[in-house]
Length: 261
Image (cartoon, rainbow, N blue to C red; front, side):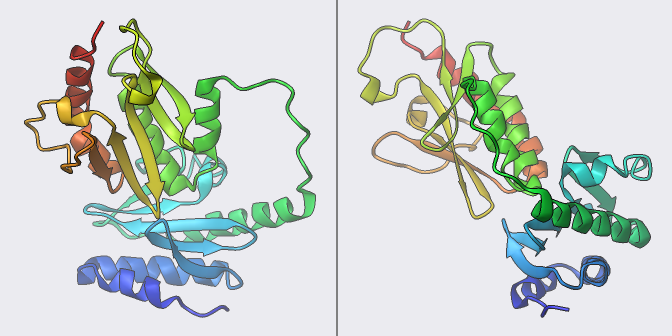
């Protein structure tokens, strides 16, 4: 078995005793199921890798999050039916025992799939059809680790559902969102159509609003006081996204109301 990561030790120690107990159980179970996997902190949470990312887990206010990638959850969806979750994550409540046998089964399944990937992986044929802007964003998100990808997808849907004239694309190597409706002509270098650009770095999800200073944000959502007029919003996880959803949509609607048509 590979050595325990000191960074994971520190992560676990940062939580209350009862949560630490569950995290230690989770860690011990996964390590026993995947003794050859490397343990580290990835995207700010405990991560196991073996021929690629294997599983992640993390502690939150009311649950332990387990991230075995979408295929790991789909295979065991009947056994996981009693738990809340998303496409790539499942939530184990803090006030209930962890399903350790099930966690073991899912981890071993992920090992099998990762090892198969190593044997059968072939160079993908060149694509002849150019992806649409939205397809490019979807492909970009699919390549992210599940723990990060689910949160990014949630933010994406909140932004797109705010107004039908908000469109998306990959810009500056990240998902970005812009106003697609009628607007008075302007210099493209002024970025007047750009509403939000995501900045994904080390597990942190930051939204950059290039002209966010013009929005009268009374919620306190927007951060920073940059001279160039940009403002930022930082999200830690899915729970943080849900808590800020209404404030984010309010900011976006205010931005749209100021468009010079």
